Image (cartoon, rainbow, N blue to C red; front, side):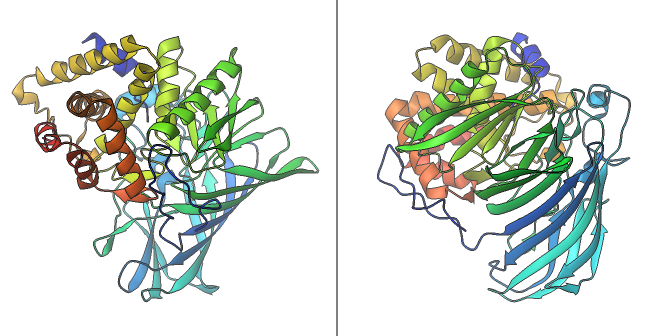
Length: 486
């Protein structure tokens, strides 16, 4: 995610691996395939053109947790938008709800395991669906459910926006990550990106009024008119998550990028970008740059979409969104590159966004300005680092009674404002990687990040994984991490 522009500006002032294995351009390290078999989601979606979705979900899951399972746990992120939910901070509600408060959520019914009714319960204030099962290590089961989803009217990651775009992210029941013998059922947080998921594959059918154009993770494999509706089929394999945006106003500009000698289709969906070709070409150029520097982009397509997401931008599997409120030319360019870089740091290499959000955001923030520096724009790099220092310093100067905690390894639930989150995760995170860059230089940075990418592709990396990648390049990196990770 790219933090809200207003906070950043204020702070500155103060199962299938898409064919054959992919090789990194800057080394001979092949990307590993995902841990197979990955969870497979079959999503059948019907949208009524207003505020309601009907969903039928089949989730094919193989137990690779290392033990037997008596339950499956799934996040119901949409219920963060229900009355009393925590989709945003209280001070943000006026901006988020453009027509006054509007509530949404998900109602799940007809839950089955392998075709038979299964006991289930909704817990954690509506945030978790728990389904009883009996799965030994290696067993495979199909969870089937139906759901009715109500979309709020809001400028956020989920809902119908002020411009009429339908934002469908984290709208389906999402299998929780399983770690250390238990399901990670972390509660939704109103700050940051409260998501943790393993690589999965998605096969999606969408029925919606014919005038709606779909921008989605993955590739549209077929599209046909059926009376007054359009039937669309979408495939997104081995991605971190699935996102879908709908609008009758979308225009699309298509270009291409090269990644390890392969063509990547880059499609930019917008609602009136006067220089769509330039925006799309910037995303394509960033894809090519990061592919050459860190390791090849492994998907056949990348989607960029303009829509109100309640922040400067937001990242998803093989897709990125940029908010139209980012109008400053330079800031918008940085945001496009930032969200594209997330395809490496979040998308292919996952991390724990609850406990270590710096690991993708700080690194992505650095990667974005490293792109500009490598293209001869030293001013973007210098000014971004200076802004990050000023932002962090403004919080460190607060009275100790306020209790500001600069520790990078903080859980999302401990942040009380977006500004505080930006100061720690983005600003201090960026300064960490700037310090590492000063230590190891251009070649060392490329080497460390290439190793980090190739060794952790299609997995969720721990902080120790990125520390190891840098200390292998320069022993002094351990001291830099020691200084900043506190």
